Length: 395
Image (cartoon, rainbow, N blue to C red; front, side):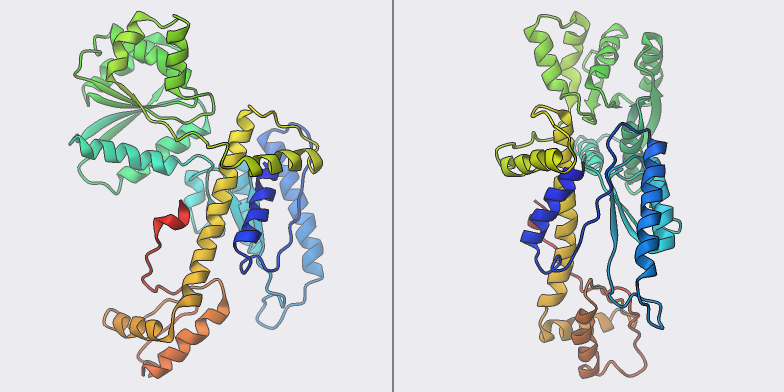
């Protein structure tokens, strides 16, 4: 996925010259096929060698900060084990780690991983929000969550949905681990889950796995209009709708599946607009060939993942730029109004900025508004100016 990050940085430098006015990239690329453990070892050793050599040449002042104040980030497109190891490394080295492993539960432990920011090329958070929205819209109070035994993506997606439900009142969900290779196991699940709810959410990386479940729905008499099924789109193996249309065209769809389909709703991500990102696709393809000596077929699913990573990397940069823009563009009057308004709430203010110089006008306003009197505290960590970012920033 290195080429996707490379192109993202090119676009980021063009779109946000202030944030990227001075930066350098160190690539570590080893060709071949690696297990997760091998990749983790390779990355960790490379980082250790890189930072030990760089730290030896850095001058430090009495406060312990680097004189050149460089801000170091590691982008990890690897698996969860690699992200965990890099998270531990980042904590010790004060190194920010952007890990493309979605919201892997362990990484949310901010005491252990204070410098890790998880993200994903697939928006599992949007799936959770969509399911909760559907449940609310129909006035349901319970549903069954069936998560196939098919890898980390399902575990993460179901985990995010379960976590989201902890903040929602009035919805009761029971989670099941489903083995779609056993017809008996599927039928037992359907009969058991019916006692809890007539609404079932199915999660699998491979949309083909939904077919034996839906065929069992007909065999168990649940394709009767009293039960409803929602399908998660988690993998890169095609959309469920496409699989069904291809089966119908080839006259290969079973009668039991055909009878169950009226009660099935398949969620889907919007298709990638390849025309809109044709320039980026060409750049990623060329970068893969020239820098990484890899050829990516035009129809490859790898390219779809790369586009997802490109989008997420740019979204992260947009967030950084938005925060910087807000503090840079506030007028003295706006800052003073904020300070006066916030005083009615609390005498403790938290300051936040990616640019330390942005604190200066705020602290000057503290004096002008008479708040530099010993009654107010402004820790130098983060500032909340009660800003609402327009969603268009992240469209």
